[in-house]
Image 1: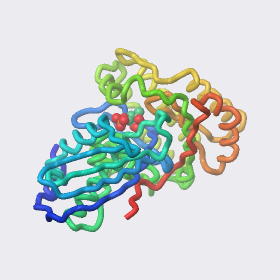
Image 2 (image 1 turned 120 degrees about the vertical axis):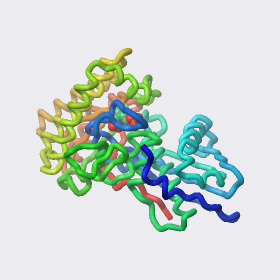
Image 3 (image 1 turned 180 degrees about the horizontal axis):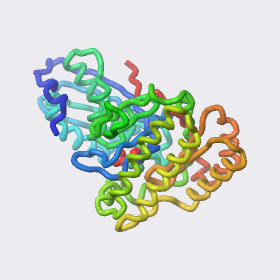
Amino acid sequence: MENKWINDAFDGELPESFHGGVKWQSPSNIALVKYWGKKGVQLPQNPSISFTLSQCRTETSVFYEKSDRFGLSFYFDGKPNPAFQKKVESFLLSQIDSFPFLKQLDLRINSRNTFPHSSGIASSASSMSALVLCLLDMERMAKGTDSIDKQKASYFSRLASGSACRSVLPTMALWGQTDAVAESSDEYAVSLEDDIAPVFKTYHDSILVVSDAQKEVSSRAGHALMESNPYAATRYEQARAHVTDLLTVLKTGDLEGFMQITEAEAMQLHALMMCSNPSFILMKPNTLRIIRAVCEFREETDIPVCFTLDAGPNVHVLYPDRHAVLVERFIMDELERFCSGSLWIADRVGDGPSSNH
Ligand code: PMV
């Protein structure tokens, strides 16, 4: 399907003096209802819902200069990074019809993450959304317009890395068409900020780093394996039902319902991996130890704390701010020992991307 922004593409000649810099920080996000399985061009098989985080961010700056052809050099943490350069270059070239002005620019991109490198935290959501925001900012400079369209940012972030489309929105985002939300779309995420009880805006996500090793199976390969997963159709139906139920839970502030759906989703994601052909397991023994300890702590204390998992061994521990002191004490006393190098990241729900110009 042709994107609705293609007719707006800036295709004029840039002045010889056209040069400058743009800079964006964009956060990671954690899915509560998971996107796992895609169709067409980076479209989800089911809708997903996430918290936008605040601490785990990528900061990207792009210096651009008029040139007679497209050029790119990419630095990560101040050093040339050929692997990232290739990924970024192939994304930008794939979008050249939507951003033809790139053919007249030489770019130097510097990127860094605000969280530890070796935390094993997927950074494509934060890095690709930060890159797309810089791209739209350069287009804005070329066109001489005032602001960036968030829906457009989400659309192109999705093309760069599916879940990145949710990172451009504050607080909570929904990506994927569902009859429960009229403006929802498979092509971009929409904000749920105005549809959730205040307690969810206070949520903490303490990310317990169980392993900092490179993932054994990439999410790209994991999505592809869903095509032959015998439970795929049931999964997509279940995820749709979870989205509808979670939307109600978020509105009403039902913490029991929230915990039940969130944990069921985490378990289902990893069960799908175990049922793939070939099957794979991304959890580690310490992932299970943490999950068990979180559930026991909840039973003993009645504190509404729950867990979710990404496509990896790390555990995201979720709880409202009013319980932060007790939960953080519990993490330090009981869970830190299961973390690689005792590392955990105190993150929480955030306001989305920011630019400092
Ligand atoms: O956006 P991708 O291709 O990295 O896939 C993300 C997959 C999960 O993190 C497991 C789920 C999600 O919705 O973010």
